[in-house]
Amino acid sequence: MAETGAIYRKEQDDVDKLEKGGLRSFLLSLTGDKEERLTKERREAMAAKCQYDQAVSDLEYLENRLRELRGQQATLKHVRQRLKELSQEKAALLKELGGETGARLMELEQRQAAGRRPGRPAAGLAGSVRFPHPAGRRGGHPGARYLHRLLCHLCRLLL
Image (cartoon, rainbow, N blue to C red; front, side):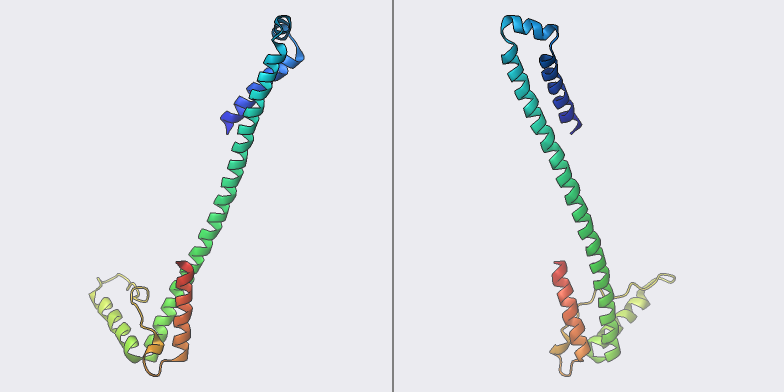
């Protein structure tokens, strides 16, 4: 953009010099080429001005778009964090309710805890286990079904 601005200023200076007069302007007047040269310089200045204005416009558009994308990125970080929290809540609820999925989840977490090195925290399995739909088994808890639907909805929003 600085380059197009410099070109525009140079072309406009050429026009200003011809319009104000001076030795060059006087010599072109004597040869009869002044108006022709002035028209040419004005066209060049106008073209340079258009390029400069377009560069400014492009820069403003890109800065606005960057701000929008950064805002969306921040929103997505929040949604991902909320999805992780809901997944952990679902895992806790499934373990609390018992049943086949809760028992399997507890078994997997126990295996992971037994297999980890001392001094290292367990890395929770809530995000790595795929849960079957709680309504698929007889007597599914309504809270589990609601939580499952909520997590599915959030996943669709992220994808």
